Length: 71
Image (cartoon, rainbow, N blue to C red; front, side, top):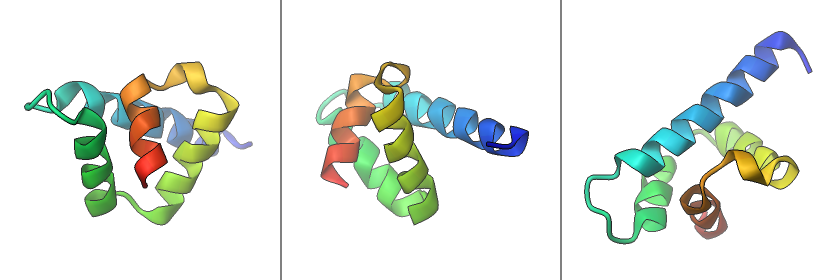
């Protein structure tokens, strides 16, 4: 993968984990994450994040993993 691709993956990881920690209401965090991702993320971004989750699961929060399962 190119350096540009590596940067994009790192950026997606950072954004996903930031969304998880920035949810103001601490109820149904995975639902709120998936709602946000449905609204603002492209299908390519979601596909890449799913690939990251499968290949390196420890890099994403449990809430992000749960959100990905509902998308």
